[in-house]
Image (cartoon, rainbow, N blue to C red; front, side):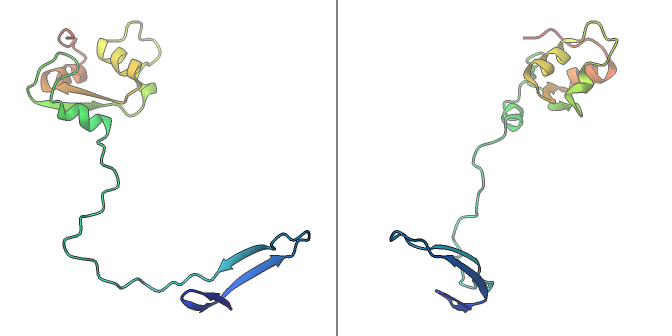
Amino acid sequence: MLATENGPRRGLRASVERGDGRPPLVAQCGGISLARDSTPRPLNSPARIWGKRRSEVVQRLLADVCEQCGSTRQVEVHHVRALKDLNPKGRPNPPGWVVRMASRRRETLVVCRTCHEGIHAGRPTKRSR
């Protein structure tokens, strides 16, 4: 039994005495109370927020601007599964959107609806800004 601040607990303690007036080396396993903390929290306490910063893709989407043509109408996100899918073998000149995604090393591109449909249809999109 180990003496803890919450009373005696089961556990294992190993101690190695050292000479020269140095304190002993002590290793302890266990001795932790598994009782649930039932003290009530105040009702008006703020919720726990783990991260206050928004991810880069959320910031880009909230900017509400197409990264391909600069339009601000119907902005959405184009996503590829993996960066390796951007450059299949045998494609000599990749489109501009592929170059942009590959240079940024991003699997997402924030585009307007028109550019997004053009990307999926294989049509050239509008000129970049």
